Length: 107
Image (cartoon, rainbow, N blue to C red; front, side, top):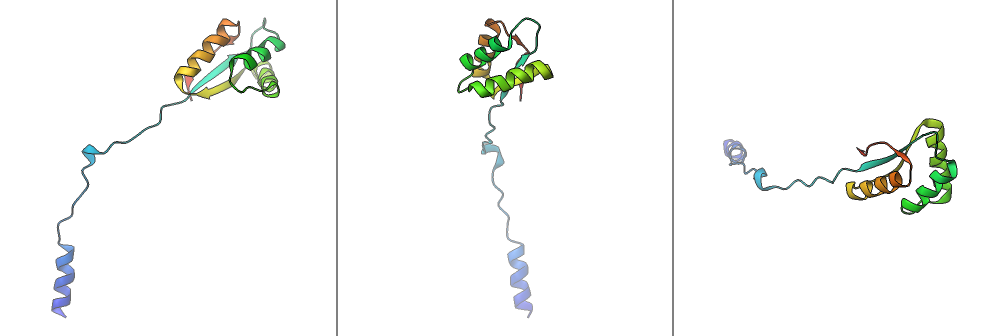
């Protein structure tokens, strides 16, 4: 019986090898950014909806009108979320088209 216990304890006392965490690479995804249109007193519903369809990829007419209504009734709407570079482009295009834009913010 002592032999069995010794072998069990012997296995438990074997050296433990831990992975080298210094060389491990932790990949983090790039953050997303929000493009936000604000309500104003001078852009028409039609102009806002047309701009969204023109500058935001794959924006349907139905979704553009939903967002336009949200801008009007809630004061703002997030019209696109994604990587920083395209967010900056869409923000700039919408601003140049005359829409009132909130600063780009991390999602």
